[in-house]
Length: 117
Image (cartoon, rainbow, N blue to C red; front, side, top):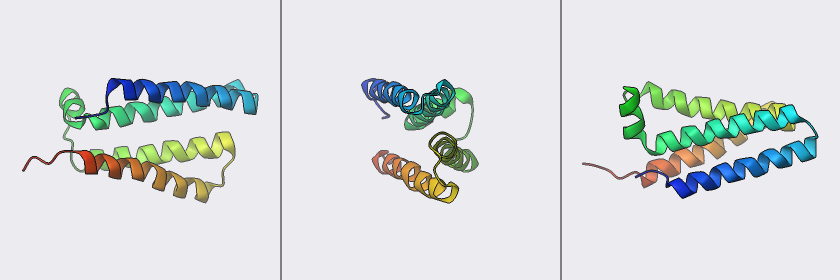
């Protein structure tokens, strides 16, 4: 039970809006491209992890342990680096914001996953 396709479409629509706003406010195509790439990657990670068993089954990977930890840390780093490089956020504040922002999504995802005991 993962994210529905209309939800993913809304996330990509939000991505397009944020990319356009970044280009308009920063007047820089490269910053808009970085935002588009980073948010698309985060949406892809979220979508893949919402269908964890299917995703890891097709990739031939184990869904527990080090891979989950790596995906969590990588998504925090991507979000923080985009915040630092595009919007000039302070480094420590950006990583703290990213930890709580991305962490809240992971925690929510863990709470809504059905338990098969």
